[in-house]
Image (cartoon, rainbow, N blue to C red; front, side, top):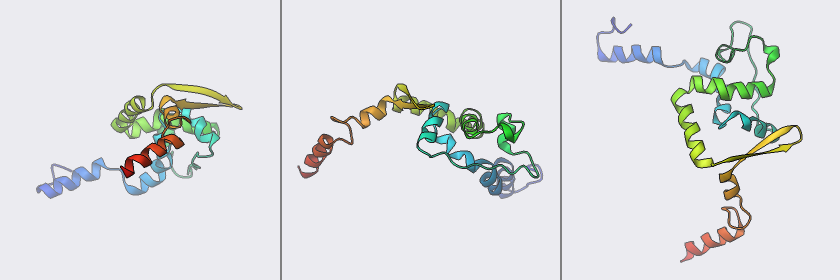
Length: 157
């Protein structure tokens, strides 16, 4: 393609056609899993479940094998439970689709969130991070009455 393109605009168009994902493929094959890519790690899948935030995902296997199946090594749709979809999306799908962005997000999460801790709620494990306890600290966290009063004083000084 690039050899046939003589003008710079034609070369740019050629590169664009072979390096971008067509919108209809993105919307059908990638976008349903994009919310999972915002999770910092697979252990937070249970947090989504506890808060009823898991997106509903359906696969159209009438004509082609979905990209999700190819990337995550799924052989049959019967193996997929919501937990398996979330774990495979976070650990395999997102790093394959959003390669550099995914690894940068993991590094930033580690720096910003701090150490993690786990607690069991029923059959699920809830993961919390050090930064969330600092943020929600009842004495002087960002949501406490004392901190909000402090901000109020700063505004009027």
